[in-house]
Image (cartoon, rainbow, N blue to C red; front, side, top):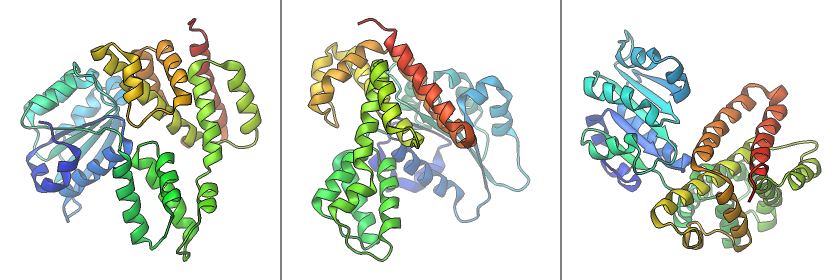
Length: 340
């Protein structure tokens, strides 16, 4: 059953009637928000709920993991929430089995990236009445402004319209990015009520992100010389690996969305021109080139690899630069080998 994201808060108690949830799409922040609401409703006030998290690859490499977790009972917990990250059609059989057996007190929350209309997983969750499917598309500027204004009001911080617009632009249509910026602003403000535009510009590192954006575009376009030049000039001493991975993720998700829509309309030009959020005119030619270079399957693989690379960087800080550069260089080399 399809339940839109804006309907979630209206019927929170209804979640207890379901035990399978699919949250798919490119909006990481929205998926986190919905997941939090579901978990709060299931957990209630007694905290007797066990929460287990897997990545799809972990389950595929050891299929007993999911079944053991789903069907084993606990002496100390009444409920169990199993979260599966990066879920795809490869898990359809296992999910279907759990749905049919419906173990008491076990809830599954599946996080997926963009799923095509022909996806088995998406079709199953959309058509079955005893499960919930929620598409999590990118936030509109209006959505982000509502979230930002509420946070600013609660923290008693005043910003100009120019500053608000800049923060929203920086958020790349994802509330997860927006909240990262809000936390920076809160930490900076402390007892300061008003922050001017120049302070905001420095605080969110806007000029640096612009250079990061160029770097990611060069990488996806296979512009090896420009990519190496930017790396040596900008990031010789320090590099915000997580920021660059997030920018890469947003651009990959955008390419995927355009390619999937193109399968239905067969017209790249119209999709690019009407795309939301709008693609800046200087970037349109770059996006067209990237669309010709990358296949849908390759883009999906990169989406999975981004999460794995981020995790590896966090777990291995001493060699995180090596891990990061190796990942980006492989993408750039693959793109450069494509002959337009």
